[in-house]
Image (cartoon, rainbow, N blue to C red):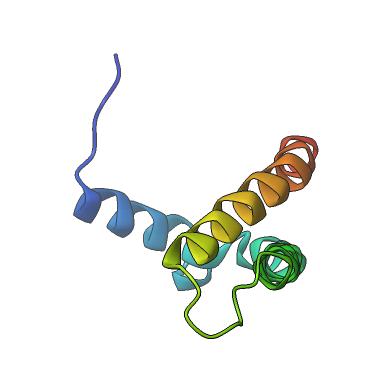
Length: 87
């Protein structure tokens, strides 16, 4: 039978079993992956925004929005397979 725990009960159980450090298991791997992922996203964002004239006077906010969409799609295309392998 499946027993569902509240958030509080789950936290208390985790701390009892593994100590406070158990709450942070895996944070190192996530942090190591976040740096390159953000670097890819912002590099693509800046390149697309510059190519679209996003730094010129009077540019449309759509350029920034489009650059963000392209950067997110590019980043996800690269990082999703990495995350799948990591898991």
